[in-house]
Image (cartoon, rainbow, N blue to C red):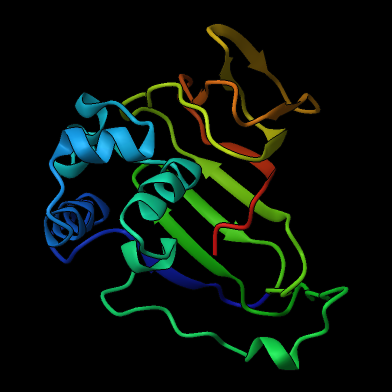
Length: 204
């Protein structure tokens, strides 16, 4: 296995830097927390906790924030705007092939580590991810967004809330939903949970 390229959402002082970047980008656009809440669909209280480093934010929720701030998701992990590894014109439009020995990019936000499972493809819409969810941390508010979401539990347990109803997933269990339905996931055990997740649209 190749060594993953890690893009941490953590600053040198150990504090989660994703929230700090959300605050910076929000202020650059002249938005209040209420304004960002209106545009992203996330609650003011949750956004405030994320900005202060009290709560972490998942990638799909961060995607809603990024869209509201007219930024790419990668910019919340890197100080500089992410560069394309390969020009889209040089990529095949109908498939990608990712070998196990190929270095994969990982994004870390709070309790969750996301490993990219496929290379970029200009005409492909699925975002396959391997997600490791550490125990503890603040639970996200349930929210809805455009697209679909699928999760398959490999190890551990996952508490998945869909439209106000909680479902406990064990290894071998999966869930598939329209992402417009309010939902959230949380690891309330004392062990790391590993999930294969596929979402639309692509986040990066």
